[in-house]
Length: 434
Image (tube, rainbow, N blue to C red):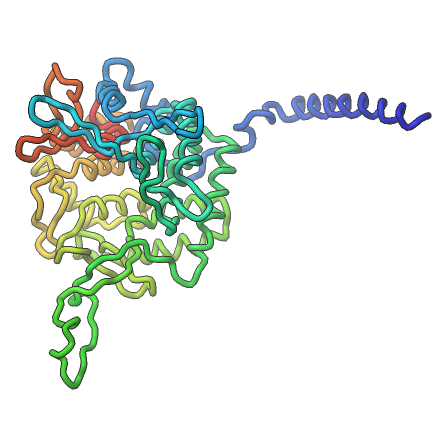
C-alpha cells in the first residue's frame, strides 16, 4: 500500500473515530458539549432578592421605567477610530441646567462600566453582557494596567498600574454572571483574573492603592528630642501616607476564589480576620484603611473624623454573616427607620451626619445586603426597613412627566440638577425601586 493510500485512509478513519467518540460521550454524558456542563454555582453565591427568576422577569414591562430612563440618558456609543466596532459605554453624569438644557458628561469611567456589567449579569441579558465583556477586555483591561477612564472615542484618558482593586471588582461581576448562569467559559475567565491578581495577595505586603493625608493623632510619630518645634513637618497635623483601602478588599470575591482554588484559603482567612478585627463592638464605622504592614488601621482619610458611609456599607455587604458587626448593622437600620435616610458622611466620634447629601448608593446597597441571604421574597415586599429605604430614595427622584430625566435620581445644587450614573446603577442593581 502506497503512502498516499495510507494518508487517504487515515483522513477517512480519523473523522469516523471522532464521531464515534462524540456519540459515545453524548450517550454516557448527555450535555457534555454545553458550556454549562460540569459546572455549578459556588456555595457562597448571592446577587439579589430576584435570584432564581431574575430581576428582568419581575420588572416587565411597566416597572422598568428607571432602567429605560437610564438607558436613554446615560448610554453612549463609543466609536473606535481604528476599528469598525462600536461599543456602548456609561456616561459619568448628566446635568440639567437652566432652560431645561441636558448636558451629558463625556467621561466614561471604569467604575460605572463595572456596575453596568453587574446589572446586565443580574438581568440575564446574555447578549448585552457578552458585548459588555468584549468592550472591557478591549478598552479597559491590559496586561499590566487597567484603564480607568476613556472618552467617547475610546481613547485612554487615565489608567492605573495598581490593578488588584479593579481585578476584584471585575471578578465580582464575572462571579455574579457565573452564579446566575454557570458556564465553563465564565469560570475560565474568573480563573484568569485569579492568576492575574494572585501575585499581589501572595506578596509579603499588599500594594497600597490609596494615598491620603492622614491625621498624626491616628498615626503617631516621635519628634526630634532636641528641638521638636524646629521640624515644620511635625507641626502639620497631617502626614501623607499610602494606604490599603479596606472596602476595596472584597471578602466575597476572596472567599469565592478560595472555593475555586485552595491556595486562596489563607489569603481569605487573613483578610477576613484583618477586617473583622478592624472594628470593635463599641464602634459603628469601619476604618478607611490599613497600612501595608497590616498593623496600623487608618480610621479616616482627608478630613478629620469624617467617615464615608459607602466605605462601611461596602464592607458590610461583602462580608459573610460570621463577619458582621451587629453594632454597625443596628446603627444603619436605626438611621433608616428613624429618618428614611443615610447621609454620605458621618462623624466617627459622635455618629452625627457631616453632610446633607443623601447617600443613594449606600441605601441601595443596604437593601441588597438586607435580602441577600433571605429565601423569602415576601420579605422584600413587607420589610419595614426596605419600606423606609424606598420612601427615602423616592424623595431623591426627579419627578417631571414631561422630562426624559423623569424617574432618575438627582442631586440639586443652586440652579443645577446633577444625575450621577453610579446612583442610578446601585439602585438598579438592588431592584429596590421599580
